Image (cartoon, rainbow, N blue to C red; front, side, top):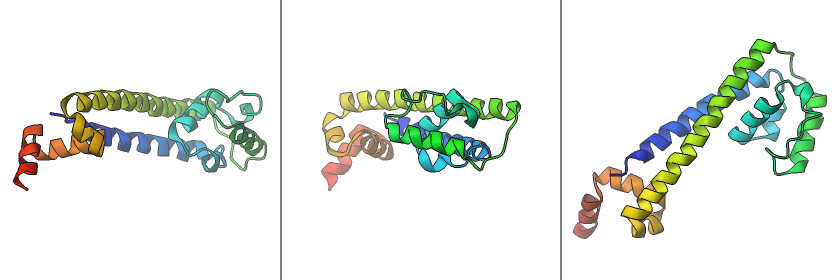
Length: 155
């Protein structure tokens, strides 16, 4: 059986919940960054790398952001931000949440890779037709690959 697609869905929900908390909390300090950086992992990496928005100006973000226009937009926004000051304890807690987002994102990538390999091994044709996730959901819904094949043959 391929039953990991449910875990992937759960992980996606958890990642989004944690990322939302990071953005909410860090948004008090640097609200403009949300509009510039939509990707949860990139946002979290920036929070971990820079911490306070005053550090954005002198930080090289090329390892995190592919687009240098985005980097300069963030640096400009940090200079004129309407955000409030936050404490060291706030930063520590926000960065801790950001680390959770990144570790769950990493785990999700590993799990997806595993699922992809399993699906290619046990149901290569199905995987080609509908993709790894949909194929895994179909097998899971049918109860097994054999049941799925029988369902198909009945129709």
